[in-house]
Amino acid sequence: MIKTEVRCINCNSKKVVKVGSQTNGTPRLRCKECKKYFQSEYLSNGAQPKIKDMILKMTVNGSGIRDISRVLKISTNTVISVLKKEKTH
Image (tube, rainbow, N blue to C red; front, side, top):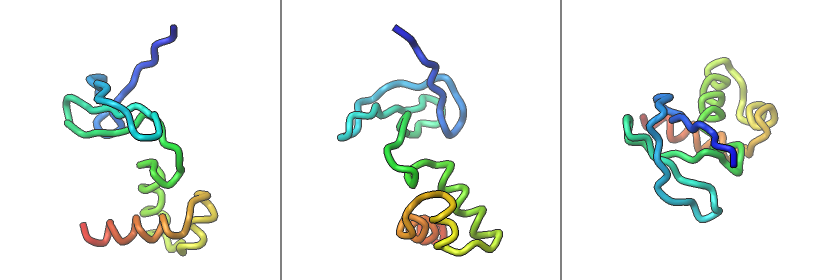
């Protein structure tokens, strides 16, 4: 049996506990320090936090919605929804 060290994707802490699983079977994790929930793996590219950051960076650099979706291999609807959510914050 191989154990892998799981770190929080928000604060990089090692204090992570499993708190159940998603409907698709992937484990749901919670950080004890920042108290945020996250998944260890994502089925779609658009759900990954790194992709969301890249969408925002590419938008600031002048890339269009179709260009971003083509480069990151995600749906244009995903790009639009990320930009709409960021606009409200």
